[in-house]
Figure 1 (tube, chains in turn blue, orange):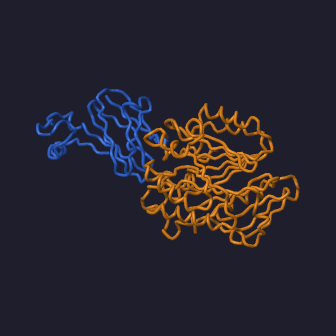
Figure 2 (cartoon, chains in turn cyan, green):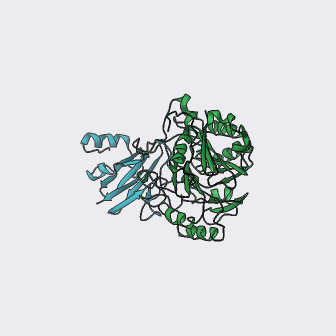
Figure 3 (tube, rainbow over the protein chains, first blue to last red):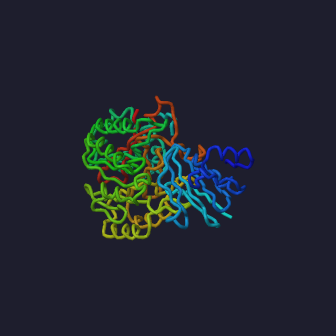
Length: 120
Length: 322
């Protein structure tokens, strides 16, 4: 789990120059909120880690598959909006949560794998 | 299952049909290579290493076929960087059998990522197998991205719904089922209402003495629900088969051999030709299990099935690639 909570972290984000908003020329990282707008879920050992992720509205969550087996990220309630393609090892899927709510999801290949993003 | 046991002839002294304990003991050997034959209510078992000492008459029947499973063409991680090679080795093993099996069943996960070239490669490799007819059912890895359309186009001619079908061979009724579609979060494999209705209808007019072979990817019994190794509505399917004297269920998915006998039903899962997976609960997750390279072939395998008309059970023999 990665959380950039320090100013140093913010500076690092600035240096990297990308938070998925626009070209990054005009840095959109002035606010405290935006330094939290990129979060990661690691998929490994048939598990989403963390299984429950709580984020503020506007956050982009990136799932990265570190397992040696492909997985997917599919919403349990609305597979039209939250649905990844098949992710092989090292492949990523990103989704920006622009509305608050609870988003349960699972791996459609291995349905016992479940997770949840809570957006507030 | 990997423990070496001495060869032993098991007799049913009570002459009441199946010696349940003997039969189960024999099934436990199957992973290391035991050949079980039911003759007149007596179960005989022989170690595969001494198979040459059994008469051909004892070994052969009116029907023989091979089950392969989980070829995962496209997988290339350390657990097996050459799944095409191990599939070819499985074909060589099949071609080396004393009596050429009449056909093959592939119980799914043909491909690893549902890619066309992966299916093409498997088709290519299987062309060199002596049995020319292959019957397929999909695994969850075969229906990614397109709700199984590609699988149906390639292997589903004449099938219904998501690809279920039945056919007869020398008096045995075969049923290929699909339990990898519409999987629900937190759930197990599922057959679904439409397929269950078809199963009931399909066997309605069959004589109770007809041997039945059901094949599907995910096990139709509860091997280990925590890892999704089971099918939530299989009990209903099995209820429709209750009246039959001999039912054999062949599955894949768990990448190891396992058997269970329950009344008239023998459940059997096949090893993968690609990579092994851990025994239930023996690891954090059911992922590919790495074994030393020289041991890999000994945990991959094929299943050879023989049927002798008039006997109660199909003789199911697993052999490893090494």
